[in-house]
Image (cartoon, rainbow, N blue to C red):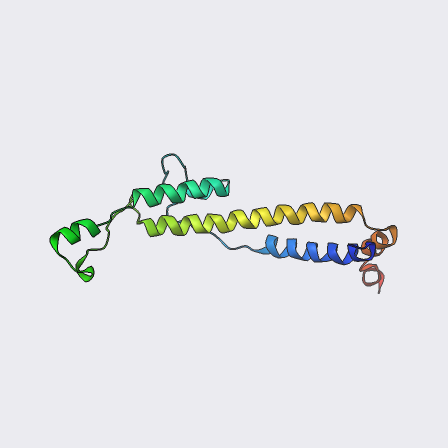
Length: 145
């Protein structure tokens, strides 16, 4: 990167941070009050690795494969009943949806952290002229009568 690009990159980073921070979507977890053994509350999972563990746990708990029994009974694929498995009162699809929601949140948090790190690094390398220009933006509008 050239020194002449620092200011424009910093402005782009600030815009990206502002876009993420202004997002005021309310996230509701279907399984919000359910504590999954060995995982905890999905909404409180703090790492992608823990989410993988949660996904695997739900997958294991939701395995309800009727294929072998259906074959033994001579049933066709259309006749195989759907799984009615529930985990702590919720279907596996609800758990998977909450896991995907939390994954999206974690990815956003990671991106925001990286953008903030970039902002600090870029700010450190601003020239005095660029800093002066950024500090005085809008002064004319403030003193205009």
